[in-house]
Image 1 (cartoon, rainbow, N blue to C red):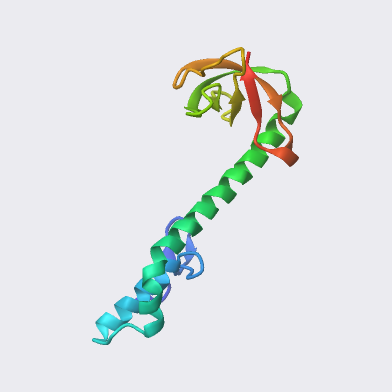
Image 2: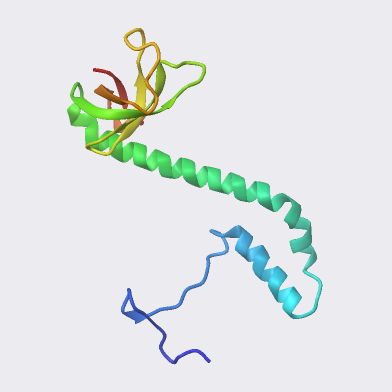
Length: 151
C-alpha cells in the first residue's frame, strides 16, 4: 500500500512520477509487454508489429535529441562569446578531421566553450589532445557554432 501522501525528499512536497510515453517510447512498449506477461496473455498486435522497428526509431530519436541539445549549447556559446572576437584563449584539441587534419574541434579551458578550429596553412595538422592557444574568429548566435584559428 502506498502512503497517503508520498513525499519526495528533494522536492519537500507530495510527489508522483511516471515516465512520459512520448519521451520514452520504448517504455510504452515495455509496459504493454509486462502487462500482457503478468496477465498471462499475448502482447497486443500493435506492440508485436512495432517491435522490429523500435530500435531504429529509438536510435533516431536519440540522435535528434542530441543534435537539438548540441545546437542549443552552440547558440549559448556564440551568445557568450560574441563580444570577444579576436581574443586569444587557451584550449586543447579534442577532435581532428581524418580527411582534413587542419580542421577539428577545440575545447577552451575558460570559458568552457567547444568550437570548431581551422588551422589552415598555419597549422596543417592539429595536435590532437594537446594544448593550443586559439583566436576567436566567429561567434554569431545566428550562425553557431563558434570558430577559432590557432593564435
